[in-house]
Length: 499
Image (cartoon, rainbow, N blue to C red; front, side, top):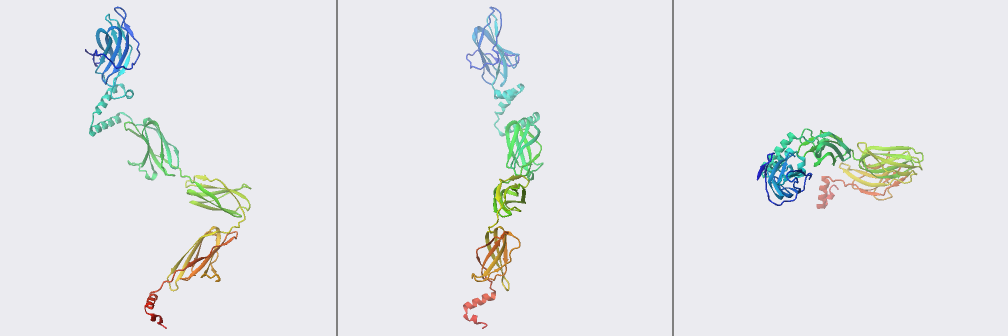
């Protein structure tokens, strides 16, 4: 038998035996409508099974022969399906024509031949569909059927064109109905380092979090490529966002914008903002004493990046503190601390400063001033001679060398290798230095010379280099000299010409 319930849902009556168990929903309280013998059937073993998207089966037992009745509907205002013959203790009714993915209320009833009726309490059942129960809970009740049918229809699409058309329509509707995630307030830069920044912000709904950014020199406002790089997770779903941006340039102005996308691709964007990364801090390496003298000390160190350096030194006896330094940005540093007192102990530290003024400090070192008895050390001696063509064929020789401390040096030489020959010398340097050069123009072409240098420091400690040998370039021959040499080799008599 088939009936129409009062909600207009077509339902069918079936007396087929057997059922699949299903969990019960709602209270199991019963009440009875009494007539005849005054004792209504007792309902038991009520089971409700959703077979598919549109069909459910309800089974139950009574302790005496009775008819079968199910009231059901989308609310507690039930419709009804009934088998009115009171001749069974095991009951089974099938509800057909239900809406998929829809929750129904229902109530079980049975009456015996005397018209005594027993009714159950309210139960609920959700019909099957393409959506899970968890997804269903998020969808408004009046939209669930529409959503289910739409998903079923979309799954039948096979062409790219059909899928694209549906996707574009969903995007258009979403933009009209829904709002894009809204950035609450202004994004903040929580932390900035020399090569990274941490950007935080909030949205008014769950959304992804991406930071677009670019150096000031690469920023292109008003274009689709305003920002050259982005970082973050567009797929995250949260309202509190934190993105660490790495690989930034130290001491540089950067532009940035935060972007949050919803599940439907609606985008919320912030305004452009900026931050400046910290400049890279230098590391101080190999801070050491090069030389200690009666009234001075020479220190040296290296830095990991070009930096200016200041040495702060303290007399441990008087506690007097002073400083000396250089504003030059370099990797290798050497500084002579002057004006010290003989026989006193000093401590010193280096402060290295990067280009934006950030400073780092070394560990301290100590030294005691002593009388200087060590002479300068001479090294890196080299020479180079050049012949200048002219009537008298002049030779210019440049000799260079270095010393490990400030020193006054003098260049000496002699022609040939005979030590008995009295040497000649250039004048002593007027100012002390560590890099030395002498230019000699007295040398003759095609000649062997022996030379050396003698140096003294400000404490008059003297030293002499080893003896070095150089050969000046050969004099170039004229065309006439070459022709005569050729003839002389061919005709011996040529050598007698002019005699």
